[in-house]
Length: 240
Length: 240
DNA sequence: CGCACATTTGATATATGTCAATTTAGGTGG
DNA sequence: CCACCTAAATTGACATATATCAAATGTGCG
Image (cartoon, chains in turn blue, red, yellow, purple):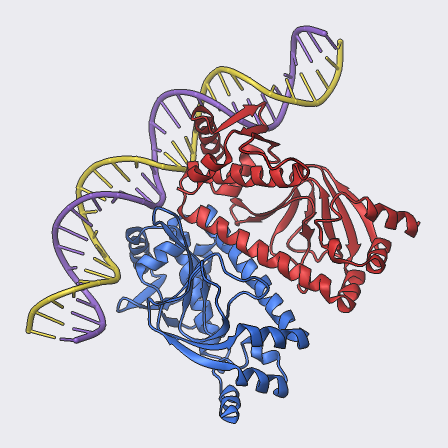
């Protein structure tokens, strides 16, 4: 059984990009032994801000949104975790936010206690987690700039650009480094969630999408699939 | 001379709160040997986003603002570093923002190369830096909530509450844990900078300050000194 | 095929931004 | 020590981007 698990790691879809990537074969075996998969449907709460989770996890597939709420119900998304991202907080017991599945989500979970044992003997994991955290901090600061200074159109353009960039990386690893090609991806969030992410209302998000479409920055295929014609042009728009 | 430096650490104003606090006497001696002080006047740039700094630092006194700019000049403060906070990024070469002295600033600097040597043999420092970074990430996410969802009045109230809380901690360590007492502190930022922090204009910040004053949430002594009568009441206002 | 829900579109309201004029504060030199 | 001078802050009148409220349309699922 433990062999089967280990085998699973070998063909894990996020093996290279996730923090397991910095583990030796032996360490991986330990981790595989304490790991198990968990599924969440879209909309399910993965963890709340008032309970201490007993596991950490890697996102295998799907998108997890981290949210905060004000007493009167206003909600803000403060982070998005995609496949290969790490979920949970080492060194701290509980997180000051909710984690909710924005799409169907598949997690690779390992018990907190066991993982912390592994941390002690494997500094490279802690190092990797530290690097992750620094990147998240950078991303958070980019969003602070977006929320504080950008117009609605720039916000929506920034958001689409972000997802398109992500889609490019994880989609076409073996694609030829060709010139400006179309980038096509499926929005993991509803308009309402995009609004919660950008500090805008549903209606404003919708209007800005329409505007981006009519200005030729994007095309839509159904409600959720977006095609970006020219990433550079979109980026220029997004950055004022 | 190195003895003098070591002696300086003993009476360092931020000794307990800064990351040096987790060092042994021996380790401290090493750090003291490679550290030196540096002064910046208000408004001086401490480091830019296009140069790799050759030192890390602790803030001894004053306030450092971390800022980002859009091509057309719009500016956003993405972080504030107060006394005892760490300045610089381990593991990454350059920061994606500017650091600027918001007030006169006194730094305790240590060369990057030497510090990284120390890191290798002293895991507790890296651990401490990691914890710092997690706290900064939490703070950044709180700001994302503020910027995305709060009204101008709530934003200004949140900002004042933040600074008042900070003033309480660092000011009255030996104060009796009395009931609701006035909190008095000096604003380290101009109205323009507060605007850059909150994603508001100078005028809106000013109007909201006036409003908070007339509603009895705060009193002003001169332009920069603020007295908060009731922290709890202010917090309620700040949190919607 | 039809239903429920998400999204778009429209009309209007409002919070915050913009532009302009005073007022105030606090440092400097007489 | 006082009066001036400059920069910061306040205040006012008006403009506008985005929110709000309401209806109509579209989409994808059962």
